[in-house]
Amino acid sequence: MTRLGKIAFANCDFPYYAFEHGKTHSYDIELTEAHPVELARLLFNNELDISPISSIMYTKHDNLLILPNLSITSNDFTKSVLICSNGDMELSDFDGKTLCIPETTASSATLIKIILHLKGIKANFMRCGGTDIDSMLEIGDAALLIGDSAIHAIGKYRIIADLGNEWKKITGKKMVYALWVVRDDFAKKHPGKVQNVLDTLISSKEYAYRHISEIASVIGKDKNIDCGFMREYLHTLDYDFDTESLESLELYFKYAKECMLVDDVELRFFKR
Image 1 (cartoon, rainbow, N blue to C red):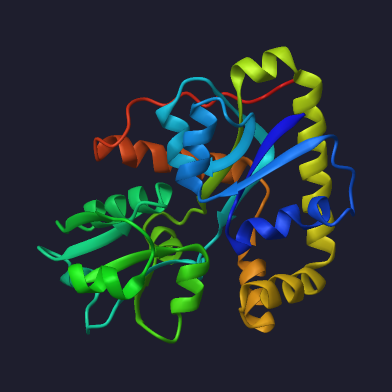
Image 2: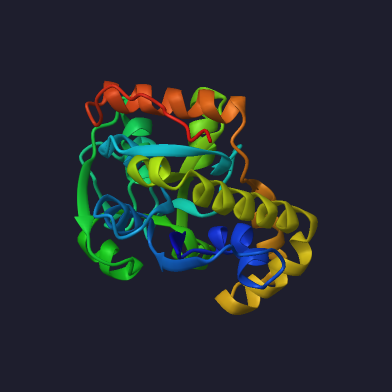
């Protein structure tokens, strides 16, 4: 049995749809669903073998290999990595302001710090438990929201920024939010199992690309999100990991190091 993680957001329901609905062979996989930071913790504690994790979490452990051809990436607007506020603010007004960051995010928390650093803006960052927007806005001037909670905030709160768009404007690059990784020790002992899971995920992803409208309707109904919006949302995301994505990830890590958030990073990939 291979223990596989799944991010508990709509953006991960999409590439897992065929796998979870019997459209592709599952190869004896046990699935655990949680938010990205929790999945990384489970992986680091040897409670998972393979999982998607926040891309920045790859830098926190030296026993990980990146699975090829899989990521959660955007080429501009993400619609699910947002800075929200009740007030009339812009990012340029953030000097001295407090931004609440939920404990469930790592890559996006790093991304907003990089963006503000590159803009020369010094904000205060406060980690908050949970993802309740009103609670965060009672404490801070604005809140970082990711995943389904960000989608549900659209139209209810003022959107200051979409971080995918802000990153694109600054760098001209894609933004890689999540990677699928395997523990190096597990890959050495069970390369065949890793390859089987990789083949399953690639097959499931390719099925999803061919059936976006069908899957968007299912996810939208399940998550109480407008199905038309869900179709648009899924079209903004890229689940491949191509050369451009790799270059974008390397630039993201470079800026994270400039902000003293990570050390040097060596990218290592699973190869059977």
